[in-house]
Length: 82
Image (cartoon, rainbow, N blue to C red; front, side, top):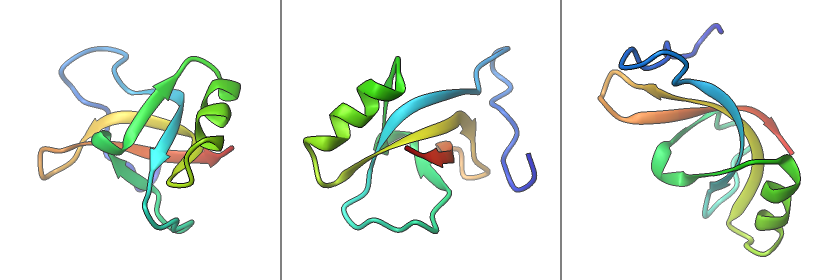
């Protein structure tokens, strides 16, 4: 994908699309990448949506990652808000 860091080369199939909640104290719809420490992964979209409903600082999303940034940090890219 254009504008994305390539998947982490340490293993095959590391970077995947997944359902998650993204921790953001202040929601910014324009952000498209997040550190792995802000991401909690879930098995289904419904689980992510349910988890986000109970916390006003977590937002359900479909994310792609992890990828390793040029700074050495693991990041996830936003695919879609749920």
